Image 1: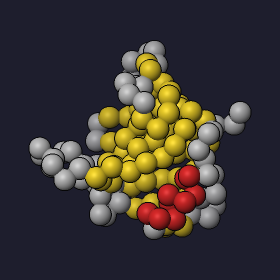
Image 2: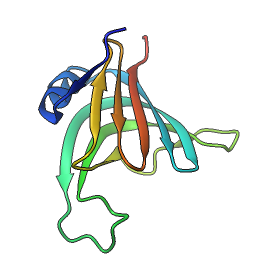
Image 3: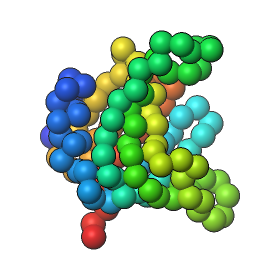
Image 4: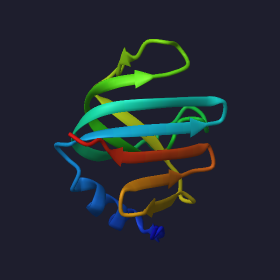
Length: 117
């Protein structure tokens, strides 16, 4: 397995190639674990300079599309909005191992992988 660290630009360029495909996002953040399946329509980034507190991220990756989220409850639920947001930090690490992306922040780890169709 070839696992290398990427710049945010390299990460974005590779992830953009997955637009139009079905992905699975696995989040392990603090005490919160969930799994999201979504049809990835597009990828965008947001900068929020008017944050109310430090919990709100200054930068975020937005995976735009429709999908469902599976939490500790037995049934999956539709995504509450038309995007899945991942907070980004200056210290975030971006990895790709030829089959999935890992995004590591101080809050947690996010894995993004393609779902075979």
